[in-house]
Amino acid sequence: MLSDGGWVAGGGDSDAQVKALLYDRQPAGVTALRDGLVRALALKPRSVVVLAVKGVEDGDALIAQAQSADIRVHTVTLSGYPAAAEALKALSEKTAGKHRAFTDADLMDWLDEAPLLP
Image 1: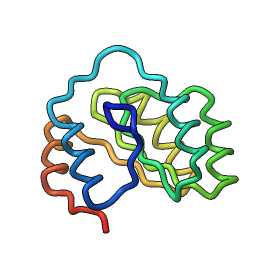
Image 2: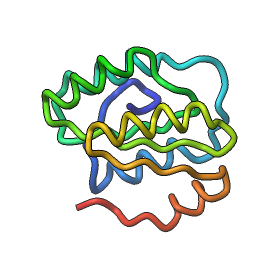
Image 3: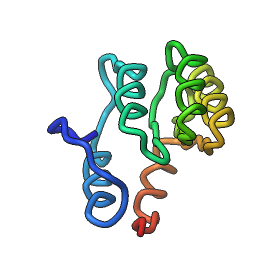
């Protein structure tokens, strides 16, 4: 989801929009991660990517929902949040997704090098 509340599919210009959104962001406040995942899963995409520093409430229910719709949930966490990393890694593994943990600097380097999706 972009800062204006809109949703975009992956690939092409969307990749550039997501990278632009992530640059110069500082985490603050609270995130309704569960609500965001419920909304994303309702769209029935092939996969969902979550970048978070906390775990998700109702993880088992979300896993079941993703599994029943054959949706892979890929997760990205930042180092320094081991509880979140453990919870989100389980979410990915149980939905055939991938999990990746980054330091802040590694994430920015990876975004610079990440190829555009087709």
